[in-house]
Length: 204
Image (cartoon, rainbow, N blue to C red; front, side, top):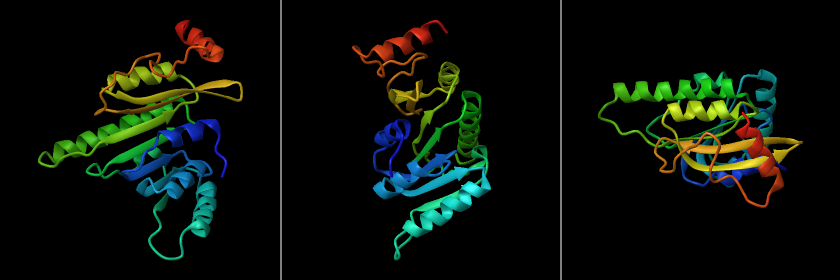
């Protein structure tokens, strides 16, 4: 399966070792299927709110699943804000292809659920919760919202695809690098398109 530049970059950010990966707004499930094939998590969850897409994806996954053994995937036709994570497991939530305002709503719902779990299970340790996001617009406002939530940076990249710029941002509260409003490690000198995008951000 051939991934777009954006999805390939997200895939490159994902290292093995997660109990659960949530491919949210997964559309046709290309990224999640790649993650299943790479066996980077115990379970890859595909989440989208469009029933027809989820039915098609379920049939496709069933065809490619091993004949023996447990399938390492689940399909959920639901709002991303309503997903239920086991916060004692290491989770990675991937959200791509949606606008900044909606993306922040999803993240805020998930973090609120994590906080509620922490408040009611004070003697139980929380596992690390990570996000990889790629908003289609309003990235500056997304970064503002992430900073308000205390997010730190794991990795970031700029992608130029179909004459548009996208940012892929990997974050968690347990990371040690500071997240900035205009990015830090994603800029590469000698890349004219990076300079073009940087000027656009600075005139925001």
